[in-house]
Image (tube, rainbow, N blue to C red):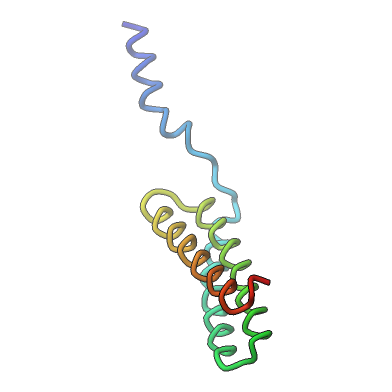
Length: 107
């Protein structure tokens, strides 16, 4: 009986034990992510008619931002919200890397 209770307790605790603790900065990091997205959209819109070198530099900077944002979502969220946001960042990274390869010669 005691063994059965121990096994049941471990099975119930397994999901909690498997979760990594979130950094104390997650609330702030998620808020900064949101503000950063607005800044990035403004920056991308501002270079829409700029010369190629300026656009390429902005695209590369945006990829760097997306990588950081993805990391915040992966670290600070869980469940469906995490899966959705990480997948969105992965998709955007693929798109912008392809854009850089096509328009900027991969450089």
